[in-house]
Image 1 (cartoon, rainbow over the protein chains, first blue to last red):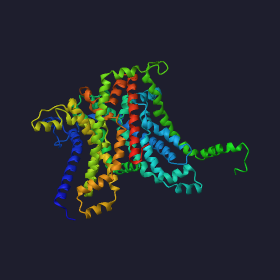
Image 2: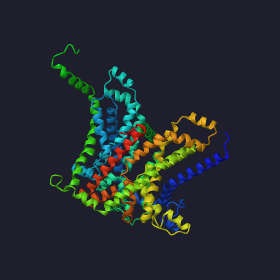
Image 3: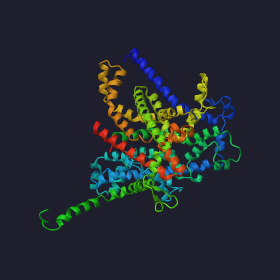
Image 4: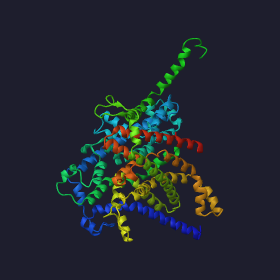
Length: 291
Length: 316
């Protein structure tokens, strides 16, 4: 097919503009990576403009990752919260979604209303904080696992997926004498792996990236997830004493420390993400069908 | 069956028994509901009771029982406070700006991505523009702060290059909202474009072929086929955003703002956090929560009504 002159210009412009947008989005990440591995002398010599690392130094990382550093503990907390949280969240969400997908369930409308009302009206930050405090959950090991374990939005996505499973499949299993639980385990679950993967990954990102719940509910540094430690490193020009304890020498310039900390916190998710991207897209699509 | 049992009390009992039988039949499904129900009751419904502290002088140590009721005193105090009114105004403004940019950018992005026919190139672009969504605002805020700083920031180097004077952009009230809107778009627009890309992929290819036969240019095809084709998706997404009017981006603002820009950047969520958690005026902050909740509730209902009227597909 022959392109007209106008169309060629249109296509070229489109390629150019999109590449430019992509560069604008990606360069900040690249820049942070460069700063984190550039020695401070070169960094200041170049006036901060290091878009390519001319000489490598891992001083900042060595400083942050010294034996006994708070980072290790924080990373452990984050990994534990994410693993336990995703598991718990999937259980809660999938079980409720499966149940509510059954149209003949007596009282379904009322139960749905109970679940949906909280999407419309929430108690808000302070009433929730008071509740968590009165329940004695502040500063516990499991408070962060619990507070993020259910999202009405994810439940609705799963429910609309389960509603799409033909009743005839479940009925034929029932005729063969399978119990509800058995049907769920051997027919519905295997069919639902894509949606479970998608929702599980959405929860994973939520748990991994959360800092605000941690800021509210955790004040003990030894229970703090890595995002909270990072926030402290970035927000205050001084480092938390718990972090300095292990390092035991004067810290290198703050800016490098901050950038190295960002890399340490963000890298796992960014490296993992391209491999699991298709599941995220899938999840968005299942959601948008109903949307 | 009715005839056999006619006249016996069983007639009234029977439907009830039938219902009980039906409920018993679904016992496992009810059991599956319990964990999520328990969660919703504890973390969503119990806080509704906590709202009462907005009408008390809440005593943190002694709890609800020992706290005195004060009626609307905290609400009066709040509406007299310049800081609250400022946060309220900023919430609406920032939300509105973000609604416009966060609404238009993803559509434009999806439309131009759709015109890329080189498969690997399109895939690479997609991976890149979705990426920022997977880092937290702590990380992204840290990166933005570095880029905008006066001594080391790349943006200032570029300004200097063109003969400008370096400024610390994050403490300048004139730039702060712009920074919020732009960085929000950079972080979220790729991800938000996915829904539109899906909607475009679902359009009928025959219509495009027919348009090509009739000599429509690419641009004409976008305007006359693609855009009308995804209009219902656009409307639903826009309405969903209206429902979030009172949330102007807590994570983002909290990681970027500083006292120098409170005047233009403090939003209700950050105000509530500061007053309630940092300054420990829990009751006053809870009053702000109530105002935020009520307006948010109204916005969702209005948005949903509009959605129903436009294309019969309310979200609730």
